[in-house]
Image (cartoon, rainbow, N blue to C red; front, side):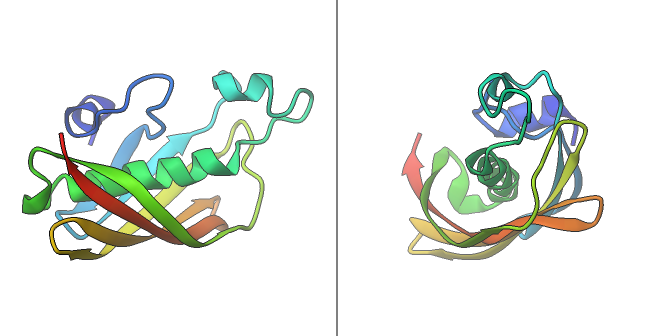
Length: 142
């Protein structure tokens, strides 16, 4: 998926659209996306001057956005918005800095009562694990 196609299924826009492309997609099951990390990101002005590191919460948000692409193919999602309901077992394994490319893999685990669900996610840089965890979401009417 190109950035234009991503914008058709996600409501996020600059400066909060954090994924650049979807490389692989198994409809309603899993997706692999990328986030190209550049020094032009607005958060690097303050995180941290002289030693830019991508904030962990934004790595998790990028993982959730790839998850949003997965959810866009699920029939229960039509006309609905997914919101964070929780994060479990999230671990950060390496710093993400300008010049890195995050490769994010998300797999849908479950959707319960058409209202809540969970997904497993991991983000890697150059084949090294940067972050992993389970993301929970709630489905709300748009």
